[in-house]
Amino acid sequence: MEGLRAMADLLRKGRRDRGRRKGTKGPRRGALTVALALFALQLGQLAAPAWACGCGAMVPGDERRVSVGREESVVRWDGVREQIVMRLTVGGDAERVAWIMPVPSRATVRLGDPELFDELHDITAPVHRERHHFWPQDGDWPLVTGDGMAGGPPRSGLGAEPPVDVVGRQRLGPFDVARLTATDPGALDRWLDGNGFALPKGLTGALRPYVQKRWEYVAVKLTPGSATATTATALTGTLDPLHLTFRTDEPVYPMRLSRLADTPQSLGLYVLAAHRMEPTTGIGGERPRITYAGRLKARTGPLAALSAGGSTPFLTAIGQEFPYPERISGDHVLRRAPADDTFQQVIYEDRLRTVAGIPAWLLTVTGGLALAVAAAGALAVRRSRRPESPPAPAEPPAPIA
Image (cartoon, rainbow, N blue to C red; front, side, top):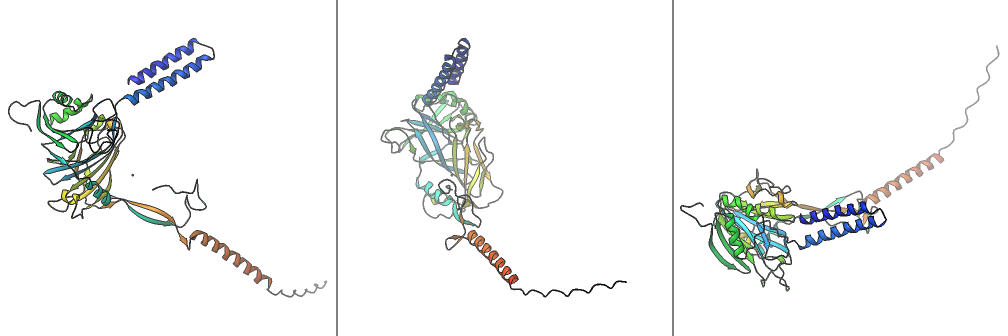
């Protein structure tokens, strides 16, 4: 906002200068003022830190930039207990980063298995099928455009409670994990700031609904020298997954804190439950889309281990985009879909139907024209060979009365 105000002041000053100077230099100076204002605004945007996280709130440890380009999470709910395995892909030049994730009850945290997401990608990948068409389409001869290349186919307790209580602290690979309870969002703010979990302005108010509902928090800090850092120690790439487990009456995926993000968010959510599941609302993003739905068939591997217990779970893959994160209105609460219909995306690759490498339409058109020409020639020959009829005899003149 400060950058926009500065640009507006410069624009107003430029208009005053043009009013005072009637010569040819006025317009040039006005254009220079606008260019300088735009340049200053761009510099302000580059200097401002960016942070985002669909699972909660991600913040850099200094004035550098960090952003979450993609978030993938698996929710496993057996009716009593929920497990969340989340993996983030981040970019930027920050060397330290932290994020905070609210959970409905006491959570245990451990490292997840990266191969879990490889399995999910293989199972939910779209099916590619060929689809033939008879008449030429754009990209087929003679309708070739450009270089002729076809486009590519996306709780409460008794007595006084401390405002912040550390119920657990552990080191998991590159992560420093703190599990917290809080009865005062301001005290939570101070604890996080004093323990190296930088808290941006505005997050205190965003945490208030969770404090009122007496949720707990998992604060995660990633430091330099981890396997996820580049040789320049900047935090970038895909982080190791984290596996959270807690009790809940209904499956929920925390999203409320993402409304503080300043970049569009992309969520890929896999849900393992007894039936096909769906979000109750869009919570301010684009309409959630089902990209896969079906019963699990895996018997071994990390996906089978996660889904163990009870009946064979139903896997639902949900994708959603949040182009305007500030519109996020709450958390994703999941419910059973009306029916356990299966679904898998199908990507059709359109092919022109050919015969021996020749377009079928061309053979049909050429053959039709050849038959028409042959029929016309045969009719002409037939008419030329037809014998001429002798002339009819002339009638005698009528007698004169």
